[in-house]
Structures are given as structure tokens and as C-alpha cells.
Amino acid sequence: MTLLEAKNLHVVLAEDDVKILKGLSLTIGNGELHVIMGPNGSGKSTLANVLMGNPKYRVTGGTVKFMNKNISRLTVDERARMGMFMTFQHPQEIPGIRLRSFLMSVSQSTGSRVPLLKMSKEIDELSLELGLESELIDRYLNVGFSGGEKKKAEIVQMNFMKPRFSILDEIDSGLDVDAMKSIALSINRFRNPENSVLLITHYQRLLEYVEPDRVHILIDGLIAMSGGKELVREVEENGYEAIFDSLKGV
Image 1 (cartoon, rainbow, N blue to C red):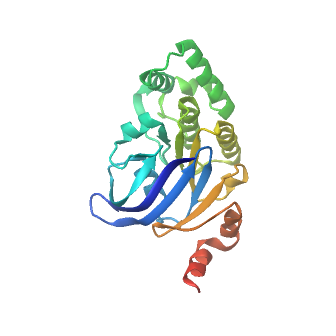
Image 2: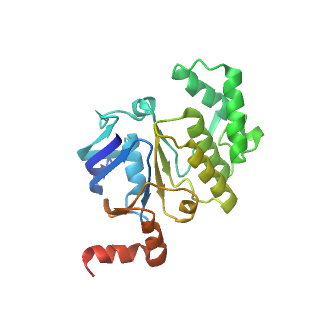
């Protein structure tokens, strides 16, 4: 069953009308993990932000549906309340809000009746699983965190909130091998038949530890090729330029 469908998306930057996505289509089913790969400037992060409703981008054509509902005009908050979640390449520091308190507040805002003590214990367990120091959970959100700690904190948020659809935008950038393995393990544990993940990456290393259902190569605002994990090996061996040349018939 389809969970998310982007159809014939045309997208420009809201401030200057520069075209970025040029008729992109993507369908993701329940329980699936899809990977978007592509060279710098191909539109990967734009796609992530458009799916999440970032007003920095303007959709000039096409639609985005989530759970069979057209969400093209919904705000970021409205999409989040429907069960969508997104990590960021560069998570912002938020002084005054502690990570543990933030997660509990989000859970309560959705109507959760889980006792606070049980919530707190789950947060501790998720942090331990990722190797995130316990004292960071009670510090201001991302303040003084290393790059890897910020990425781990976002995965803790995903696992705690349990969204239906998660967009992980270059969650592997700047990570050492151990951090990458722990995040990959957490992503694998998070997966179930009811949720789906869109993993956006510029690298291949993370894909040594996760098993995608589909891999898509994004070039110049369009999905140029889709397939299985064999595409990852093709990119690793030949690079994106070879794929681009093959599409042009060179």
C-alpha cells in the first residue's frame, strides 16, 4: 500500500524562481526504505524539504500525497502532526530547551498518556542504544553537541516519536565508522511494516549496513535511474558521470 507519492513535482526556490526539481515522481509503500543518491546540487535536499513543506521552496507543478491525502498546501507542523519527520544536515542549537523535556512535550502534545517516568526511561534506553552520553539528554538541545552527537540525537527523536514516514537527510555526513554503524543499526531496528524511511545520502558507506527496498539516482532535478542495491555498487565503481553519460547514450 502506498504511503507517500510525489507526482511530477516541479519546484523552484521561492526567493528567485530558480528551477530545482523538474518533474520528479516517487512512490514509497508502507514498510519500505528508499534511498536517494546523487551528486552535489542534484536536488536531494530540496526534495527532502519539499516533502516536509519547507516554505523556502515553491511547488509550481505536481502533487505530494501522504496516506492518500494531498498535502501540497499543508505546513511543516501539519505534516508533522500527520506522522512525518525529518532530520537535518546541520541540526540547529536550541538554547533553553532540554532534549528530554522536548521529547516529552512533543509526546504529550500528540495526546500520549504514557507516564512521564516511562517516557524518560525509554529516552534513556534509546540514547544508550546509540551510544549517546546520558548527560547530553538533559542538556539544551544540540548546544555544545559534536556533529555526530547531533545526528545521534535526531535518531533518538525519530525512534521516540515513531513517525509513519521519516526523511533522513544525509544523516551519515561527518560520522566516523562506529557512529555510522550505530545509527544504521538503530534505523534497522526502527523499521516495521507500518513505517517507511527515505534515506538521502551522498555516500555509499552507510548502505553497507542497511538494506534498502529501492535505490534512486537523482541527477539535475529528476530521478534518472531506480533499482536495487546494485545501483550503489555501480555508483561506487563508476561514479555518477558514467550513469549520466549512459542516459545520454554516450
